[in-house]
Image 1 (cartoon, rainbow, N blue to C red):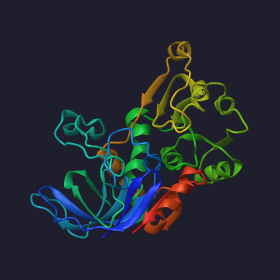
Image 2: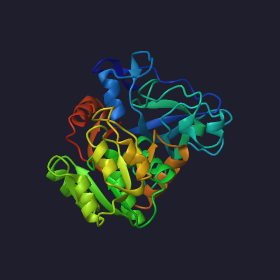
Image 3: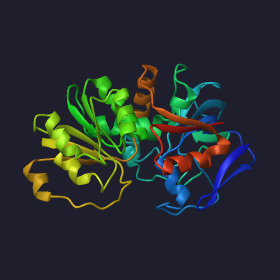
Length: 340
């Protein structure tokens, strides 16, 4: 089978590997149809693993496919059904896993494509308990954005920020995969959306997606816009994942008792914080990493209802590195998806 393996920093090779054995106890063999690119793929490509790993490593953290074979002890699945695999290799037995909080697994083995072999290959064996069924109405390219992308948005906005209909939300980096999905999800809920982006073209696209206001943060102070739009009250929720470059202004954009949820730090991991503002204004800050498998189920259900991820580019497996370079340069609006 074809597989894309990382051999070293920025050293990706498309190789012919032996196919996996028949699926074992509790496993399903998935024929991969599409892989979505994420910043975690860029980090791994650069050599930023944050944990011990063994190279070469099959890349790809987010994917979709169809069931090719079913292992012993697996029920509820049939050959040919469409599915998306949860990207973290969790234990399934710790209190967090048993309670449906998979992203807090106490014995996680790693993230696919980052610490352990990922999904940029034609066939992969995965634990059946980590698979989520995908309705036939959802294309493979969209379904490939359901775990790291759409699921992350679900976990941020609903598990953590508890976003409610009619609230005002500030969404950072509207051109990113999660930013563009967050706009669509928040608007479908009936929220007022203020989106930020780094150039006027991305702001225009954010407005086309449904954002009520768009701010070019390279030219304007988005916290001032947020206060003007809300009559000096401030927004209910800030959807933050940029990091140091936007952190202070994100906090300033919040109303009294407002909620900030963050899942990233692409512009830097350290930022000064005015602690007096935090406690005087009674702000709530939530850290959010990954998602629950339940969030993925919610994501594919919303896709089936018509709330789809924004696709920037679709390329074949042979052009995976080209997609990473495009993502690294931030010349994207939405997701880059690789098809097999």
